[in-house]
Structure formats: C-alpha cells, structure tokens
Length: 330
Ligand code: UDP
Ligand code: MG
Image (cartoon, rainbow, N blue to C red; front, side, top):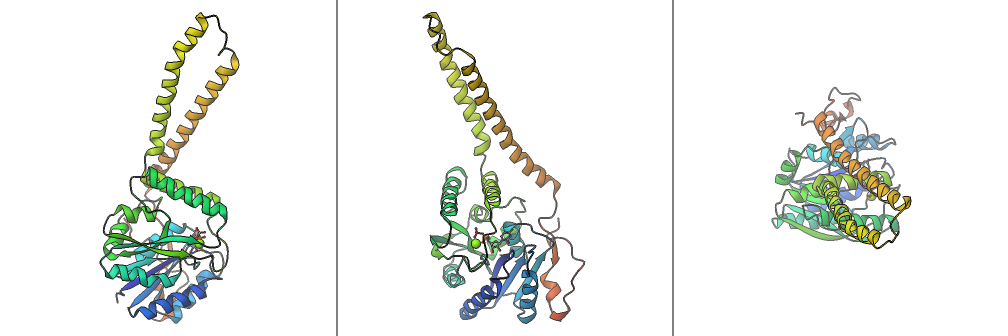
C-alpha cells in the first residue's frame, strides 16, 4: 500500500535520540491526516540504533527499516532511503532533531501548491560551534560561486521531493553524492521555506573535520571543473610573469645592476612552481580517483535487512537474510 508521504531519515549511532525522534515525527505526521511511512536507514551504527529501529518496526508497521551491512556515509544512507521510499512526496530529515519535524507541514503545504522541490533554509543555527558555522558558511558560498548549479545558500538535506524528482534522482547513481546539489540540478519547480535549525537533541556530530572536507570535495568535484581549470589559470599567470620579467632582468643587467641574482630567487621560483605542479597533480588525482570509483561499478550500498524482512509476522524478522545487494542492481 502506497502512502502519500514518506519520511526518510539516516541514522548513525543515534540511539539516544531515536525514540524522541520517532515520537515527534509520528505526532506531526498523524496531525497531517495523510497516510505516511517512516524509512529509517541504519548506516552501520555501532550502538543500539539498529535494534531500536527493529523494535519500532515491530510496534508500528509504518516504520520501514533499511539496515546497512556497514557504514556507507550520510549521503548514501539518504539515497537508500529514497530508493526504498514509496510515497508521492518524500521528506529527507536528519534524525538528530536538528531539523525540527514540526517544519514538515509547511513543506507539505508548498508541495500541495504545486512545488516539486521544497527545501528548508536555515535562518538560524543553534548549538553549533563557531568553527562549524564559519566553515559551513564559507562552504555554501564557495559552492555557490564555482559550481554550475545555483545551490541555494544555507540549505541542508532537509527538504521535500515530489515522486517525479525522486524517480529522476534514483537514476543518478553517482558514487560521490551531493544530494542537495543533485536535487537542484534536476530542475522542476523549487522553493525555499525558512526554518530555525535546532541544536542536536543528544550525542555529537558525526561529521568530524575529515568527513566535512571529503563532503566539500565531493560537492565541488561533482558539480564543477573549476579546480581542474585552476591549473590552466595559474599556468597563464606564471607564464605572463616570466615574459614580463625577461626584459626587466635584461635591462637591469645591461645597466650593471645585480639585483634579482643569486640562488635564493632561483630557489623560490622553483619551489613555487613545484608547489603549483604538485597541487595540480593532486587535483587531477581527486578527479581520477572518482572516475576509478565509478568505473568499478560496485553497488552504492549493501543492505543487510530490507523493509520486506519486517513485513507481516513482524516478530519473524530474520537476522541474516539472503538479500545482499542494493535494490537497483544494474
Ligand atoms: N549520519 C549517517 N551516517 C554517517 C554520518 C551521519 O547516517 O556516516 C546521519 C546522522 O545520524 C544524522 C545525519 O546523518 O541523522 C546528520 O549527521 P550529523 O548530525 O552528525 O551532521 P551535522 O548536523 O553535524 O552536520
Ligand atoms: Mg546534525
């Protein structure tokens, strides 16, 4: 039975938040008077989250668990949620209650007015460190400037997608995913709804600096060639400087001056160019590594337990079902 509304939430070590998250989402969705499902994707949690999800599914058949074989990352977990969702509209929401479920009705309202992508724009953020705020703000502005799609500033993955959009996005199987870029890239009628981002209900961020950098480079390489072009620009600048410098040095020498001579100037020039070349190689490597990942064509994620394993006699969920690959095997 197809529900009107699907809510997709990725979960990684959120056992402290999960019961409260479920309670608040259920409250909001029940008040909407529409049929709904809650797709909870356990992204290889090391705590008790998977068991909590199983318990919720046993009590409430509208909860559809997708349990990964290991941690595949936030964006991939959301992708799996989209794959398994069946609603006419799908809401993506973080499970740490930073995205208040109470905003969902206003997303649905815009959807009812005919918008196909309704993204929630953070007007305020509570409980984040200044470092996170600064890096996030710089990140969104950089992405906005250098990518080919106009990704709205200060929006996370908290958004509503119409089924049409979800179907298109489900066909985009790129490995290094930046969903908020992809959902803008597809087009359709888009609109933002402002909201106040809350502090985490419990626990800590699962995005340490390393993951943030990875995420940012996925976003940039996924939507822009700018870093590749950078080498060309710097090359032209260096060539221009050297062409200008040649007559200057000749003039200085003929005038008998010994400025701009000696090892230090040579060394600086060599080190500078060496640095630029190595950085350019590294940038090439980033793109080539991603091409290699795509070429391998492995499934995006591996599911240990799918919602079907929890259907009907709910108590008989098998711990190790045969299902081992993503539903979209290709
Ligand atoms: N998350 C996930 N897999 C990961 C990291 C995070 O599914 O590898 C989930 C996490 O449980 C949360 C959401 O993604 O629901 C956002 O993560 P987090 O709150 O840690 O990020 P932040 O809000 O600090 O950017
Ligand atoms: Mg969070």
